[in-house]
Image 1 (tube, rainbow, N blue to C red):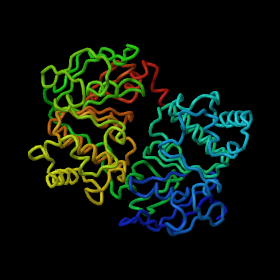
Image 2 (image 1 turned 60 degrees about the vertical axis):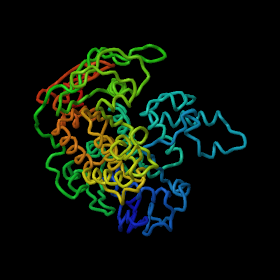
Image 3 (image 1 turned 90 degrees about the horizontal axis):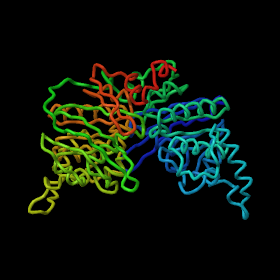
Image 4 (image 1 turned 180 degrees about the vertical axis):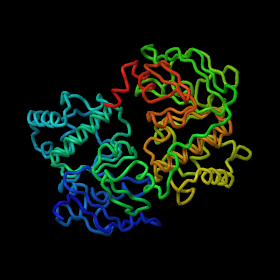
Length: 512
């Protein structure tokens, strides 16, 4: 038992009508990086909320042992005092406060009658150096990149004498370079004896970083294995309980005539007049999956948000749908012309989290559930039920609030909303971000079905394997321009990255 930093035995947690955890066993050795994998809804977050005191003792059954001693936490504070810190996907930082203030926000140093700011600044500088970050501790957190904010969150945890650090999807919004920095930091922490529990759907990172991997499925422990005995395929099979013959189920299909034509399109910031999108031209054909790749900030989302009428920026250029020039000033115009846009931020722009599944599903297509200009509740439920069955949505019932669903099921509701409106063109912006591999596979199959029906699909993704695996053709953007175009046969990771970086990328750099 002395070799373990953490042992959780027989953990069972029941919510009304749902057994979220069923006799789960989870053991982590001291100083290791231990990956916790499973589909959305497998129980990972619930298990970590028990460990971090979010669900207090008495609300679950089972035993928790930390460094050989039985513990039971009644609060987050008690868990933190025992050396457990959790960093959630949505960071708990105050943007208007400085780095130093954020680092010690819940620390004793900030609870003194007279705060010693010199001491706080000195301590902040020490912890910033500890994580390899060279920034002024007086910098406001809101001025930092997401990658640096993630590192600040880790430093904040370390100030509380953390022995067990839990990271929940830490790289979901990070650039490739930020991911490498984070991985390097976690390896350094491991060498210093910090135990890390790493939750991620990005199996490439798991294989690169973890020493051990535990897999949960349907609230049960499936296995715990050394990473040297595992592969991405083995992890996927254990997560979903079946073999996925291909991670990207691409299908050849008949490609039709152009459905969307964009000619010499540019957009400009409303206040400064600075060009955001610069003279972009491309065609999307019926039944085609057109991949858009590029580094963060390349302009992919800005291009399609503008085309969809989601910004007030000044624009110039021509947009044609089915050969006819159209003017789109607002999203309602785009919807009328047959466009649909699945935003990269589904919680903010795609869903009303406090509203139920049925009402979210019919939001865009109210005309399909109305009689005499009044919503017919029975018809609304019928249409929503048809879509949830088609999408294989997992939920207790249609009255379930969307905010209570897993990420994968939330994304299926967003897709249902747009598909119910029978779009000609479907724009998918990071459609599988934060979604487990099983749900990804189901969404890819839905994309294929829509393309088979002749829908033109734009696939914007930061995951190169996804772009390469699902696209018929790939366009690469750099600094607001299209910098490259490849057929499916021509496209490789090296060629795309060379275009995305302006030629500052080579096969040697990816090997490095």
